[in-house]
Length: 500
Image (cartoon, rainbow, N blue to C red):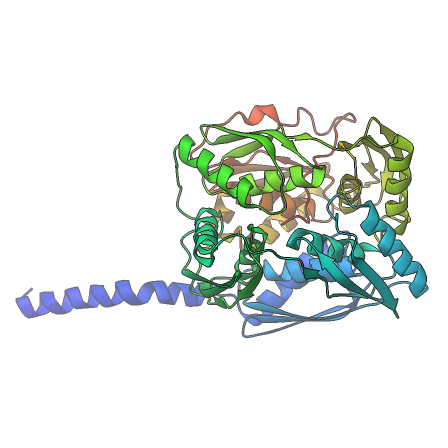
């Protein structure tokens, strides 16, 4: 081969190396019909959802959901599921809520009482009105967490069609814009899904502005959680979604030192405006985080655990945070838990028994789906002075599908999930008598939890035995492995399939 031929050959190789990644991405990108099928499948597999009234259209990666659903919770979860599908660049929500008819004044009264019960909402300057099923919230609250919790509680009340949240923040400026910006940047850099993405941060008078690009609608929405950082007054999310920016699920393994992880988790917990930790102690050993100290309520304990799990490099989290709360009469707590169940759109017709002893709520009975079981724990844990929720509720499960069919359904959903598609070949699924066992290796804790959520939300699954390992960590999975999931004595695994 002469010199000229060698140059031409090298040039050809260079062109192939440059062009090939883009060609691969073009092949990887699913077409509109595939995306539509995946979205309909994700919505249809959820036992809590009734997909019969939902219409799915797809154009240039944008999914439009139209039609009707029974309540605001279904509307929210349908949108959330669509955003997690591979190839979806945006979701337009045109779903209408068609709940059972209730008198407006009854709805407003129930919303007021549930807000008054909340351990999260301390502000008393919240006014509630209802017109034709649309609830309007006005007044002032002290934090974003109170504002969001009021919105969430309202949307769960039976008969609510829509929520107009006009609550304003009583915000007192305590730190400079530059100090807030540094904390936002640090938070994004340690997040398990947003680290290393080209996101620019600026702050004007306490309001954060995000610009740059991400790879999915899910990532864009996830960036909104920086509003929980102390002293953030507002957020303008101007991030653009670009198909080629597919870095969201980490495909590189990071091994920060235990000291670095300890500092990152401690920083995350102290920055979160939703938390009031006392005597906080964070310990890390080979990627295993242990949280000790106390917080004001069970909601804060859950949020602290989520903050720790979201730090990149974490293998798993043990949450030993205690609850410090004002003692109240057990009968009052029981009355409030029972009332919230009776007015909740998902729980009002379920048979759940409530007992309270020294602030510990014990639930028993039967419900129709795993969602309702987990949601019952969430609702009870929000009540003031609840120290712990022990959930002995059983799901009234009967085998409707062959195990082999359920196995294939789970694997297909993992393949279509934007967060899990990069590790789909590393995850193995085995279903026996409705118990789905997940084995294999993933890159981070977020992928591990997402795989479990996907399996839990597949029709025909009654329990998930999650044996997935985070790559690079040899941790004692046996500590939480289910000894015999087929035995009658097994208990359900409390991982919220609808959590963030």
